Image (cartoon, rainbow, N blue to C red; front, top):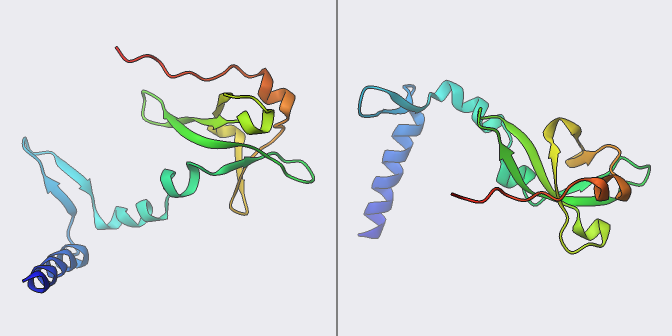
Amino acid sequence: MKKVFYIAALAICSSVLLSPTMASAQAAGGSVIGVSTEVMADVIAGWSAKRSILGKNVYNDDAKPAVVGEVVDIIISPKGSVSYAIVNASKFLGLSNHRVAIPVEQFKFDSNRIILSGATKDALRALPVFQYAEKK
């Protein structure tokens, strides 16, 4: 019984994935949700926050790069763009809790590393500690 179910599920998934039509659905009210198969290539080529950014170390750009923190969150602006990365610099600074907001434009990506140019202990210590807004 399970084998038949898995084969049926595989057949359904294959027909959807191999279909040259839109991989989207018609929602109530006539709007289309999802992305087309043509757009899916761009989605796949993009970065996954979970796989490529969150939990990754951040390095400075010294001659011998040092880990200055870890990306623990990303902040999306009300307009929908990723605007800040929240970096936990506590270990680097020897503090108990020092999370800072860094504009994403300040990061560079090189050899699978996230680099924050000019990140020194003094520079990170001088930044205000990031705190989430309280939910209303």
